[in-house]
Length: 169
Image (cartoon, rainbow, N blue to C red; front, side):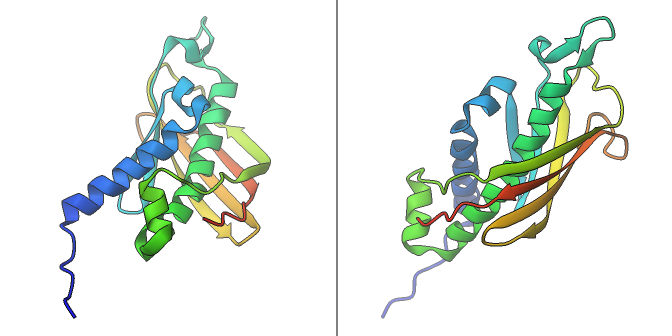
């Protein structure tokens, strides 16, 4: 019986980054807003690229509250979805092969989502990180924090509850 050599780290990283990019591209509203993700290990940082269409109050100017809320909700949902995809990629076998083909489990459905607008969203890029407080087979709770120039100075935060899909791949 021959032992398979492990894949080079760069190949594994490229495969994970490609899976994440395909997963985000599958959400049209994320593309419309200009939301992208950067992966470091299993941690995701969500980026909302500044665009004039995101301005809600041109007199200030300030980002629209709906764009901020959507950005935070996308960050939360993708964090939950990525956790499922990550587990399947790490387990190998048919589930990992399905992910390679771009067949992802269904996205979690929002039960409720509460946004705290802490300060004005300035006309520049925003960043967010989501933290899963609890994720079970049927329910998940997530907290999201968003900042622009300084991670210690949040401009918005949110808490959401989600119905998890059965996700049988």
